[in-house]
Length: 65
View 1 (tube, rainbow, N blue to C red):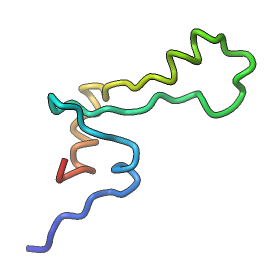
View 2: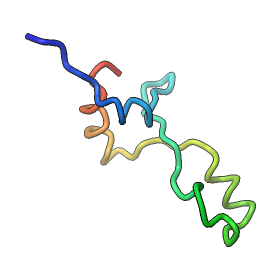
View 3: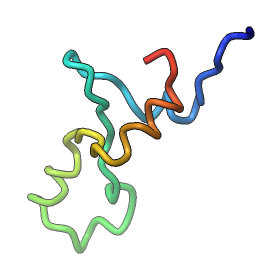
């Protein structure tokens, strides 16, 4: 059997935490920032955990994670 390849786009977007959860970056911090409050922009800069409903799909894209 050949090795299973990792989806490189997913590998650049997701990483694992120490407990095995999948960490992701939040959206909406690229442009149109003037109408967003400083509090909202600060919160968007922090990382988030992938939701349980999407975790199976992300793990399928990252077989070695």
